[in-house]
Image 1 (cartoon, rainbow, N blue to C red):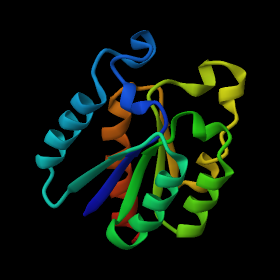
Image 2: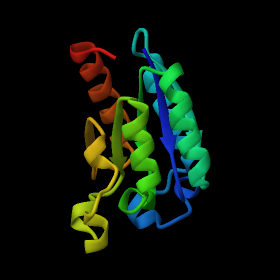
Image 3: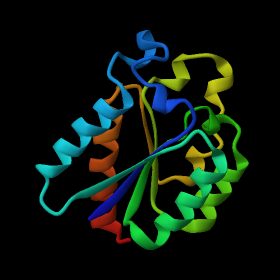
Image 4: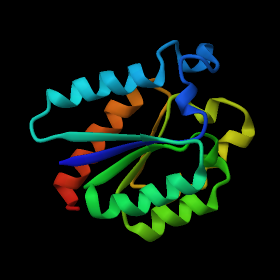
Amino acid sequence: MKILVMNGINLGMLGIREPGKYGSKTYDMIMKDLAGWAKTKEGLELDFFVTDIEGEFVRKLYEAREKYDGVVMNCGAWSHYSIGIRDAVSGSGVKAVDVHMTNVYAREEFRHKQVIAPVCIGQVSGFGEDVYRLAVDALVGYIERCGK
């Protein structure tokens, strides 16, 4: 199974940006650990993408439809207001899991509004870097049960 792990705005700054909230591991370290974990899973292949440019994120989502069984995505702040990404997830038909390293519902009220999560098959939040692994596991299980 081939899964794309997508990260959006500000996530390339993990390890530097607000380490009290997001931890001290860099984006590269977290994705390297996730790739290592995936190698222990037979038949699982992960690719990675990160951008601070919303249009690039949307373009990659549409490309993912043809190349991947599903997508795990951390849209960062876009989760709260990007109708463009919401429409791309919905319109592409890609199976997507929305992830957040922090529990957005325990943070500022504006973060409680999620415009992308309702068009995803699920959401994982609040478990730090483990959200990626948890989401990949959940996505694989969903696809195996329900089909691509």
